[in-house]
Length: 616
Image (cartoon, rainbow, N blue to C red; front, side, top):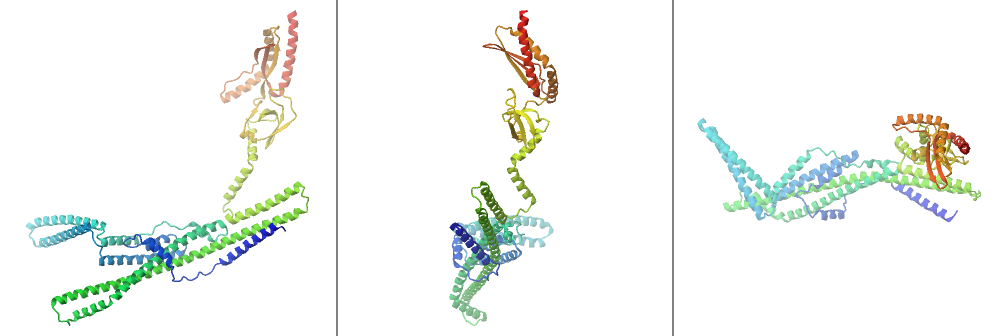
């Protein structure tokens, strides 16, 4: 065996070994348990990417959960998607409450424009309150007013209500302007919360983002498996982004909770003092002045309220952190399901690749076997060499077909197979098909028959055979020549009847125009000769001319064409040696030679008799 053969065998062996190892490593196995450790680098990148701009309330956990839920394709994934939405919705609700509490505790500083809007809002609110009190008083007075004064009092109530509507519109406008200027974040948060609650009661969108190629991971052909593997990889990337987002959010919340816990721990002594002071005020044990007692009570009350708010914030932060961790674990479980299917797809891919390698090995062995079988034969025999090449090509073609079936699979529909086979046969046998249909045209009413004088592709002759695929002519040269056969048989594929054109000189009754040509000397009177010549030709061809006109009349009537005359025509033209006379006459194609011979004999006899008559 040559060196290149050893190299080929070694490469194929290494590839097969790698494929077997891949099959073993991608076997179906129990996915490892997901740990609670989260990589900090992705969370830091996500934190840096999101730190540029944040809304008042971060609703991304719920938006992400709903986005990935549209890609759930199996019952297990749908259960995890529903769990993720539920956890994310609870976390977003807590975020709304925490944000609203934080804004109430630490209102943003107002700009001069916002202060004017806030003052305008307060004045409008006071006006509405006064309108409401006035309407309440008038309504109370209306019950005890005599009937004679009720109409007047009712008019006052109507006017007061109209004024209250105007003041309410002013209040709404001022509130909207203040919210747009950033001076009333509580109102904006409450509006966002109302929109969030309304969205929870809406039905889920019907649109689904499930990739239809996902379910092809168990196929045994490579193309659907490749598509499924790519679809699963995209879904895994989307879930990993969602998990990183949840992990980053949990890390940020943990940092905020740690800072709040440190602050609470630092203020622990003052909180304990406030508790003791509150107990003293509650029991009345301290004998202090009234002003000092009131001031101390207010201080203790404010300190205790702040302590209570801090405790609630710590508890809410802890619950939100737990929600984000649960959300991260849910996405991790979902990723495990996708990785299991992705591993199965990779296993099937390697299996298909292994089968392709086996086909290549079989084709290679077939080549070696063919070389061995034909190696002992005479290499100079071209037929043996051709047979060996054909055998190798057949083995390669069979291997290529098997590989195509491994990659694309067998056609699933019979119509597809028939369509492909028909297209291939049409391309391969185009000439044969065109020749076969051309035979029908040639055998039709306007076709040709055996014995017709025709011209096909510049070759003229008599038709001696019309087959299913070819037409055979006996070549006779151009129709205007002597018309003697050349002895050559010319074959034409019948496709010329469709793709090209042909001339049939004996279409209707096999009639054709032929002509006689003679030259009269200068010393002879041409008029007498021409007159006799015309009578001679007209008498000899009268019967043929009458039949031809009848046939042509029938043809021209059917096609609405003017009739033609079949009478002989004489053309006279002077020449250097005398007068040249040409007589055109009608004759049958197969009688042209006999008619021409007979007319020439009669013309010679007439020319010999003309001088004798003149002498007398």
